[in-house]
Length: 143
Image 1: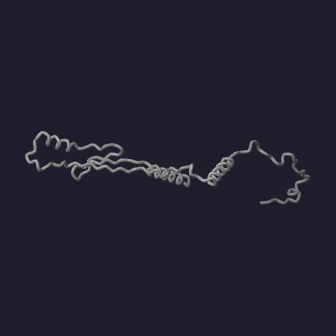
Image 2 (image 1 turned 60 degrees about the horizontal axis):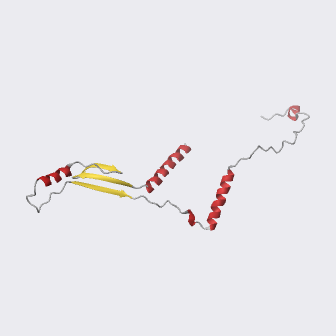
Image 3 (image 1 turned 180 degrees about the horizontal axis):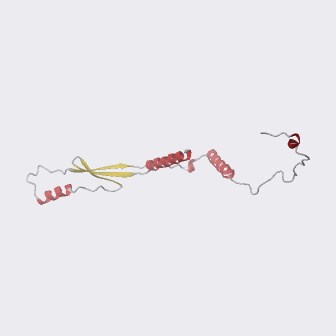
């Protein structure tokens, strides 16, 4: 259960990091007060009402030039810029920090190196000679 929890948390943290550095655009099209279409990363489709009112204005000359017909449609664009805060410059490290990083890396890599062969420290010694089994002789058994 603990491993599953850690995996879920790690995926969520990766999503948070990606969402903070990624930029996106939300394009929204309204007709009057109602939402018609919205789109991520591309232009939202229109309802076609602004094209009709534009054609009507071109085909019929305005009878009253002081009154302009406004389209009932409106577009709204929301842009979220991504941050570049996560980029760290490695060349700005001072000598002590570089020494620490190099030492840490060297010891961490060597931590997981295995031995070339299995070393048995008692292979040159023979086991002790048992004359008699004392537990059986005295009938003393551990239960």
